[in-house]
Length: 103
Image (cartoon, rainbow, N blue to C red; front, side, top):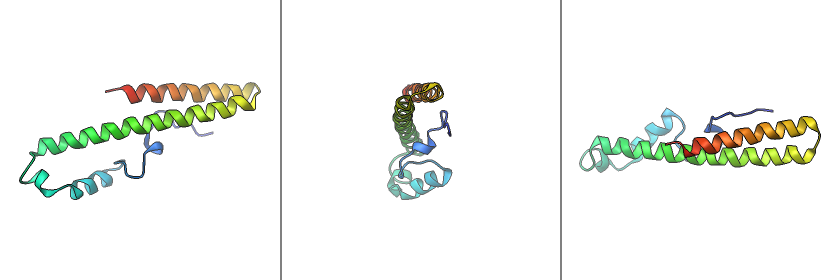
């Protein structure tokens, strides 16, 4: 069983900015006026920070839902080992929920 810990990247949506290449593509796609004639660069960086934080939180929430689903499956399977695995998934879910609430 592969435990993801607190890495939300496996739960990122296809349009989320996960890699540096994703961020570079986003910077090229935004309206040129946002960079050159309109918003100052600090505002563009602020928008990027806000988006990355929002996507991290969403990925953490998806990770928590996945871990709870896995915990239920192991718990229903019964037996000592399965229930111990279920508890490990619950711990991951709690950690993901806490990470989603972090500023």
